[in-house]
Amino acid sequence: QPEFSGPLAQLMAWADEERRMKVRANADTAQDARVALGFAADGIGLCRTEHMFFERGRINVMRRMILAQSDEDHRAALERLLPMQRADFAELYRVMRGRPMTIRLLDPPLHEFLPHGEEEIADLAREMGVSAEELARRIADMQEFNPMLGKRGCRLGVTLPDIYRMQARAIFEALAETWDGDQIVDPEIMIPLVSARREAQLIRGHIDEVAAEVARETGRAPRYRVGVMVETPRAALRAGDLARDVDFLSFGTNDLTQMTYGLSRDDAGRFMRDYVNAGVFPEDPFHTLDLEGVGELMLIAVERARAADGSVSIGLCGEHGGDPASVRFCELAGFDYVSCSPFRVPVARLAAAQAAILARDDEAAEGAAGAREDEAAQ
Ligand code: PEP
Ligand code: MG
Image 1 (tube, rainbow, N blue to C red):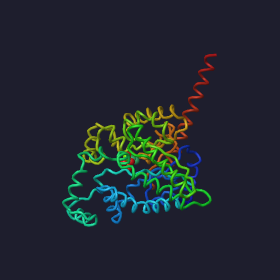
Image 2: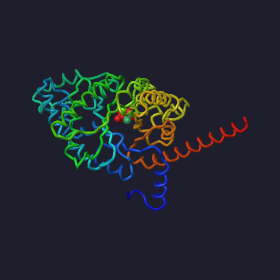
Image 3: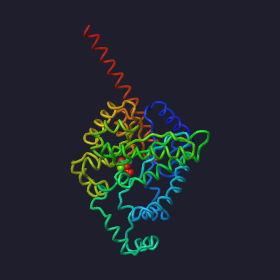
Image 4: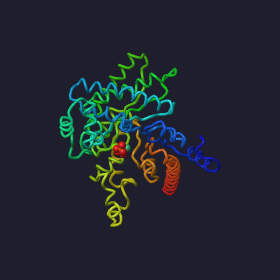
């Protein structure tokens, strides 16, 4: 790993020996993944698949799928998306070979995918063979007053399951395609913005069905895990139920902060400085994890999840994953990993090491104090 040399390399190696938690990176492209590996990330903790569709050549196919009115058009668009996704995953698997990789199913706010402005609408209408007026009407039908609270995350997968089935197929077919005696990565498929247990059950059902189909077709049965993001307060409170149905939980602290405060992550920046200056918030909760509110919910969730299933893995993949104070909180709460943007991985590795050392010191001090008390009692 050519990331650092000299004393800095020694420091990082020492930190890696000390830390207990894994540090993964949020990466959506092979390029991000290479940067992450350059910084010695232990794997990918969040691959946001919606980012794979923002390229000009692809966004219109995605739009055609979302805006299709016949099953035939819908399926035709999905069939075009499948090989693109398969190639995306195969490329990432080759880079990440041997390391864990969490792939999150599509989590759009729909408004980010719908075309804007007359020109884009006219372009797409031409491609789809419908009039611009007709397409504008379909778009208007889909507009939401609060897209961030609308048909986002798994709500899309529940209402249009073929999208998630296409993604699951791409994940499994890419495993078969890159097979080298065995599958070269063990994917972890993550369901976004869950708030009800049934959402996880329904989508897990689709994933398992597609896995069985691909195993039959290719003769290569995939190993995979399925997990949910905990990013709504309800998911945090119901973490015990969720843990019974899935293999891992990952806190999306960006949305969990937004939803706990009822504060828009996209708009809060405009007045955050005034709020911090006025002493309303000690710090921007989108940058530094709010240990009192959001953190409390997370602790409730961890306790309920572990009580329901002691082997469930627990991670964090919001922006806070690279913030040292938040990393310390995760260490104390017994998380298995944190995941952050690739360039924050080194800081997270150091923070995880420091947190582990401090936690051991605290434990040792408690042990010594306990022994003194016992002695005094005798
Ligand atoms: C989150 O909400 O913390 C998260 C990781 O997902 P995203 O930022 O993509 O909404
Ligand atoms: Mg989120």
